[in-house]
Image (cartoon, rainbow, N blue to C red; front, side, top):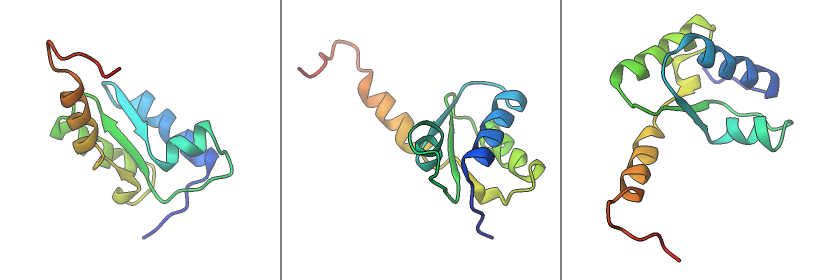
Length: 99
């Protein structure tokens, strides 16, 4: 089931993540664009990444989707692979930042 998430609904979802889930979360993708740059933009999912990146965090996010009456695919944590890979590559002791 595909849903259309507008600015107001995205705001409610992000607030629910902040209120109900522990840890730090990163919003990326179209939801971020809608909330910060283009309020009229809609998206089909919210890309949320747990900074700690545990499997328990991912299950908590999917449970929140169900609690909010959304299909589980509406809250997407697949970007965690890329976010954590970038963070791992960016932090290398002794490596100089590009100039």
